[in-house]
Length: 296
Ligand code: MN
Ligand code: MN
View 1 (cartoon, rainbow, N blue to C red):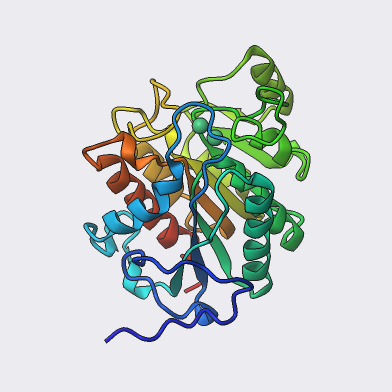
View 2: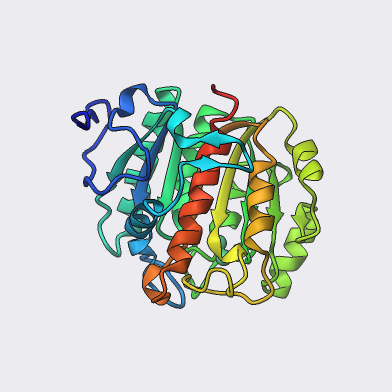
């Protein structure tokens, strides 16, 4: 019999959903707190990322709890899933404020906030909260896109500008971009100025060396994967990495000091086969197992 959910320490109510595979009901005692951000208000091409968290949870049921790559089992991990945040559709200011409040609270409780998107703009409040708690953090962005525009259609807060805004919170030298293959000339010039752009040739050893013992935040925009692997995303970009490549990059960071992460931009209705949702659930499983590896 499952335990009664205990979310009383959270700052705001969440919408209860099917939990991620093997997640606990007691968020007050877990090392990692998973929450969904069902919001796609600034999506520039094909909307639907608001349905991502639900699809990831549902499809997680088809996975094993054991990961042979990491040799770890979800059953050994202290993590909870508190459901989705009730984010008002189309109101990005409120969505960002609520997201920040949740992440801040989880940090203050000494836990790892782990967010399921939703669109990439919500990484901005998540990173802001992470930076408040860990001013010396470093960030790895797995993404097909730079997200370094200053504005998109005159708007400065968008999933196309999110890394530009994050670069105003944390020094760009603390950001590593991996898997990018699309952007404007200006974005590429800016990324070269940052000096932190990596292609699919980056090795696990290089990632480990770059992070070293600094607090690590990881944002995974699922469109980093090739569209043949994950077609269910708003802005698919041909020429992407394989599932195995992304999984080995993430799993290779198991010895790092993780302090937060997000997995964003799954748009499940764009893939009638649901394979994109299964792929996303397996990436989330890898993230849960990797980010908690040094905690137990
Ligand atoms: Mn992207
Ligand atoms: Mn992105």
